[in-house]
Structures are given as structure tokens and as C-alpha cells.
Length: 307
Image (cartoon, rainbow, N blue to C red; front, top):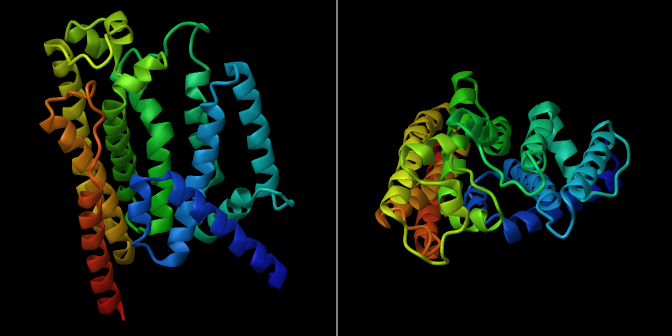
């Protein structure tokens, strides 16, 4: 039986992860709120783990080689903690507990970190980060977003194996939405996540995206390019709707909130005719609160029916 001190350490570890999620998660945190507390804590631990990996990979004050070494050392520390050895990291303490509590395969966390290191392993040092085909981009989306979804559904609970492929595709929908929103910021960091085959199909050159004037509205070709990605994202949001009824009832409101917020972001990009260059797309706080309120109402109804 765990000691009282161990329980206290675990409580503090989850509290630290909740604080990280509340500070950093933005869209995610609105969905966390409507989960039952144990599941919410596990999701926050997963998010905090992902956030630390992202921060190490994105530290542009360091070279790519230094960032890779830091991530390797961090992952070795995690694997040591996962074996049950003592760790000073509250995030590792919480994630270790969550993986055991909800049967999360450790291999999924390895894949998640493999995703954030992909940008550190591409091409020549000064070459832009690119993906030749949509299949290449799909693999990236799988590692950085679908894997998170596969972890989350284990915390949400499900019994139908179809949920796994649907969660994978829901993650792709979310990541494609992020890619559309961040085209301008990514180009400034020498990254173009839009497939090169799609650029060629719309007559858009890689150089024109990397060197476009600040705050210039999109060209006709750029709008068509972004719209093609938006259509793919819409297709994958259909998988999110199919996933919802396969998740445990008490977790569905949280997933619905998350899907609604991300899909609302895509809809705002579409309504702006894919102009993601003159203004960064976002879902207004009032709309997020309305989505959250609906989620809280659904959560209350579920709990009343269960009780």
C-alpha cells in the first residue's frame, strides 16, 4: 500500500501538471474542465509531458544537435522514472501513475517524443523543414497529434477497437487545423508543413511562402492551397463525430468540447477565405466559454443519469 508521503508526493505532482496545463494549454484546458477529476489529472499529466518535450525541441537558443541531446537525456530520465526509480520531476511522477492507472502503453509516449524531434532531424542545417507528400505530412501529424489522441482515449475509456483509428484521424484533423492557423509563423521559422506536392498543384513556390511580405493577403494560389488542406481537415473531423459515441459516457462531454473548439477554429479560417497572413485566427473566449458551458451541462446530465 502506498505510504502517506507517497500519496502526498503524487498529489503535488498532479497539482504541478494541472498548473502547467492551465497556463499553457489554451484550447485543451477548456475540455479538461468537464472531465471527472481522476481522468482530468491524467490528461493534464499527459499534456505536461508533451509540453516539456515540445519546449526542449523548440528552444531556438540552442543548435539542433544540442536540442537532440537534451531530448535524449530527458527521455532517458523518463525511462528511468517509468521503471519505478526515484525522480525529481513531478511531471514524470504523475505520468508514471497515469500510465499504470489507465493502461497507457509506454511506446505511445516514445512515439510522441519521436514526433517532436522530426523537425530536428530533417535535411541540411540551413534547408527549410518541408514534407514532400501528404503521406509524409500524415506521418508527422500522427506522431505529434494522433498519438496524443490514442493516449487520451485510454484515459477517456472505450471498448470498441474502432475508436483507435477514429482517434488517430481526429488528431490529424486537429493538427491540420493548427498547421493552417500557423502558416505565417512557421514560415518565419523556416518551416513549411504544407505538402510540396500541394504547392506545385496550385502553382505556389516554396520560396514565395518563405519570403512573402509581412501581413500581405494571400494570393489566389495560396488561398486554393490552404483550402485544399482545409478540405482534408473537414474530412477527418467526420471521424471525430464517429468517435464520440464510442467513448465512455462520462468522458464524451470533454471530447465534444475539444472537437467543437478545434472545428470552430477551422470554420473561422474558412470564413476568412483562408487569410491566415494578415491576422492570426483564433476562437473568441466568449465562444469557448459557451462551448464549455454546453459541455458542463452535458456532464451534469450524464452524472445525474449515472447516479
